[in-house]
Length: 377
Image 1: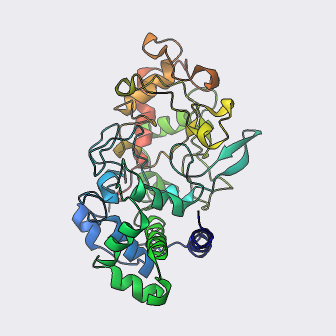
Image 2: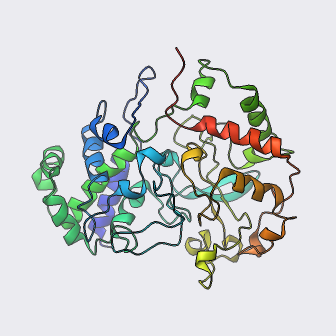
Image 3: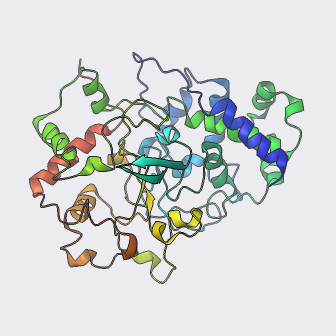
């Protein structure tokens, strides 16, 4: 990578990684359709507004027809609205991982080591395997990925951006002299895309749980039972990894229901991937460390009701399927063949003795984490 490119990457990171668009606590962001979402730009910074236009620009892909929003719709918690295990890119190729939901992703720390449950662990980064150390890399990679938007190089990407309706806004914000070559054009565009991903429109905090924390609504008896089970570290054990308290190394003091660590849950291989190599997960970026093979990032549970299918391979279609796996992995023959048994977490799941009522209660609580809740008047 050329030194000028590295400088731009880290300059944009320095300037924008800690910025957030202000979202008044008294003005939650609501919308009923994707078009309504697109039309509402109240409170967005200039950079986030440009980033939003880029996010919905289906002319950027090669061939045209796929935008960031194609696989990350606001109507599905910024996950793939088609709810398929693997998303189809502009060249009609499919990836081998489920599309991450990008809401609340911005608060992850840059990939690094932290003490998690008493030991040093890799945390943070972006994508299921942490391949992007920084948020601006996460915004860039899908543009150039042949299984996603399939732009072959910076030259083609910059030409597409220069012909877009938002390019004059980019020139006005950064100055024509700053947009000197294809690399700078792409990375200033990516910086704006990052700003949109950091905005209140992507990170809304408008779930029933958020209003419960503010004392504006009460949870139902079932939701309360589910929350208690969720936080019970001797029974359901959900909160071991999906923390229901702030994480000191995240970039927010709000609850995100993840510790950003990496786990191998002992998942079977997705049937559609039969015959393909083992997915090494985090090990790919940890010097092929055998102890990291098969470990994937713990996602936020916010909007989990909307983001099916679940797990890095999209192997489970419903929350009931997920809870059944957590509850029965070690006693159900359907789960007897983990893809990577050597690094499997054998302590926190597998035979939890949860009843069907308790599973239903936990799911009821998980549904309180869905954005767009309106407090009854």
